[in-house]
Image (tube, rainbow, N blue to C red; front, side, top):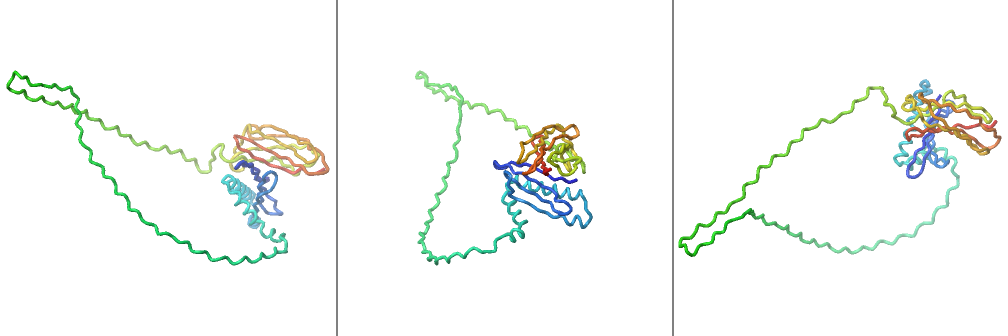
Length: 303
């Protein structure tokens, strides 16, 4: 049985709750609603009559349901909130047009003719000559001497002048060895997973009710069996996931029960649903694992 998806997405300081569900074979429609604080701000309706005409396939319907839910979640994460609102207005176009009032607003009075704009005089722009680039003088050669030198002064008693002292140039610097060349390193290519295989822990949380007996009734002792998984249809079981079951209503105090999934991803919660004859009530099931959150809600009918 296909139950649907519920996901909370924080963006820009606001938490958006996305709920996608199948309306059933009597009304073949996939409905996605976006809530903010309990109010619906966007919706997406997708009929699937083509699946009924070509032979109903529950796997194909589940794939469409999951794909539509992921597309809306991705749009919220990308900040395309206004696009989702316009998409909801477009889907509800015929019905919204039927509900619109027949009276048209009174026509606005004609605007007075605008005066022609006066031309603004434009001063001509004078082009300034570009400065000539400065030419740098060629560098001069510098001779560096690392003395000391012997200064020979002439002896007045000697008639013959002494030869001038020879200037010793510094020894040439030793040759500099070229830097070692780096050997190219082959890039490390991760192994490609085989076709049809799934990486453990990949994908969003998938929350599903097991042995679902149908509607919940007030005063019923309900046994809620939950499975938490990842990947397509939740095939990868998630162990030690935190699961909370909240029973909320407008005419009684809330009831909150918590547990964790076992090694196969299952969790069982038993709750005595309160009796009420007025107002509304619902069961909200929430699973948290590694920072990911999945949520599902079911209505509680009056006794």
